[in-house]
Image (tube, rainbow, N blue to C red; front, side, top):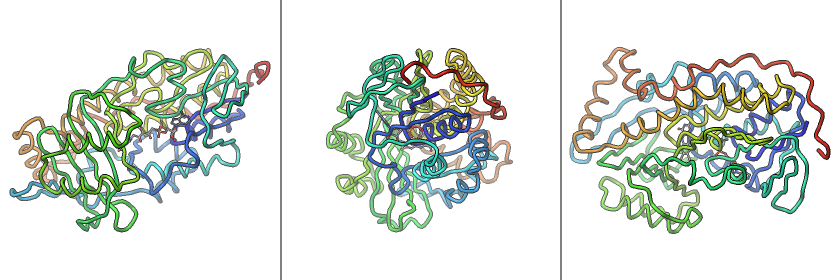
Length: 408
Ligand SMILES: Cc1cc2nc3c(=O)[nH]c(=O)nc-3n(C[C@H](O)[C@H](O)[C@H](O)COP(=O)(O)OP(=O)(O)OC[C@H]3O[C@@H](n4cnc5c(N)ncnc54)[C@H](O)[C@@H]3O)c2cc1C
């Protein structure tokens, strides 16, 4: 059976790995001209069952080799004395099984594990899907038994099948901006965080010597802007972050020179069902819990594994596998949707009192007993608990695959 996957980041290559292992013939199309690894991109968290998925792929050691850590996190309070906490103390609240890795490094490991067995086609997108017939951006037309959109928050496959995202994108009330800049403060392993009313700004070192990355979280009503116009988004960030203290004016002077500027709303994808006919979605495309706030990478890895397992068990019969996949993912997806609002409420102060409380909480945190520390820093159970209920069954032996559809 031929399966076409759109998107070569986390969900796509993971799904490709397991489907190939189950005997499917897999093709992956990716919009970018090559793997989007750059200097690694943002750090993402793999928790519990997501770590188990990469272990089962035999990639645990490789993934751990790329793990990143935070030495010290400092809450900067101009004029009032900074508060610092060791990364290990902060992360004690996350999970016993947790790996932080740059998204680009993870994508590279997953791609390398599949590149020999799966056909990757870069600089290509899907422009139409009619039952088994798929049309690509270069005009070519081919038949596939199944199509999976693993193409992220603004999925093209999803738009083709479920229409414009305005119908099912749920805005969480904040914006995220990220870009790289020279490490003008000599961070040396430190993460600096400046939290003020309705704004949170962080600065952390990247793996590239002399480089840092700035992250802005901005609480604001929903804005109307052109998603393809980076200049307009830079201007928006200048307006939204204008007037902030600390080093923010200097951070903004580096905005125009940043080649990797990212600006997006923090929104969740909330579709009732994310499968229709022979098409389904995996990862952020189907159930993105919000960038940077909700453990989307773990959900993407686990979702891809569960989908492949259900397809293998059902011999590729999508009418059986897709509902089983959605049923298995329902609880973690529902849990993931509670994390974003809790994280934003914690990280972006609503008033001066919360700015003060945050500093006091960080001060006492290292002195609290571990269970209490864990409760306070896990955002109400949060990212780690989201996957607690997931039963990662052993990958099933493949039932005999269905015949290919005519033309496929
Ligand atoms: C700034 C930032 C910080 C984040 N921090 C965290 C974190 O700390 N922890 C965490 O767990 N998660 C975090 N995330 C979220 C995490 O990156 C995503 O949840 C995760 O990458 C989802 O993986 P995915 O494979 O579903 O989609 P993506 O990683 O978004 O990949 C989608 C892929 O599809 C490709 N694509 C897009 N459109 C098309 C198209 N039309 N046709 C073909 N290909 C297409 C893209 O180029 C990309 O390669 C963060 C995200 C951002 C942006």
